[in-house]
Length: 140
Image (cartoon, rainbow, N blue to C red; front, side, top):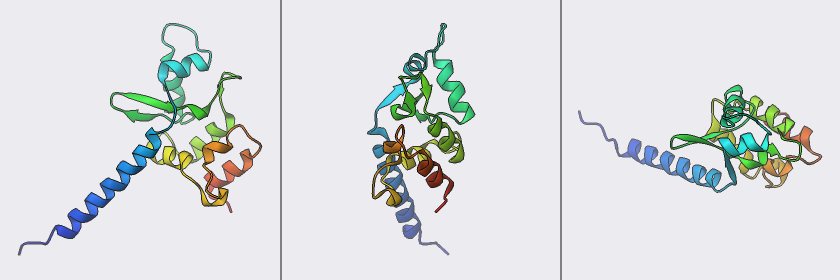
């Protein structure tokens, strides 16, 4: 007997719309490409992109795949000290950024109820690093 697939197709379309909206919010951020990350981190040598790739593969640096390359939200980089903010490294690893880059990017750039709607990315470099770690850990 034929099955009514209308409900299933509506659910799939809704899920795709939600995913597209989340991607749009993420892509509205400031990004660095791999070479710019390498320069910001003070990498030397011919292939400055390797620094970003190595950090992304280790889970320390969030990189979202866009077409045939990775883009890195710029808030992660402490350019004055030529490093990834230590709290960003810890949070990215807690949230498994290397396995779910889009989900983790969305977490960083979306308003959080425990922050009165502020975004976790807005706390990077400030005095509330313990709060970021608690939020990423799911601690109350």
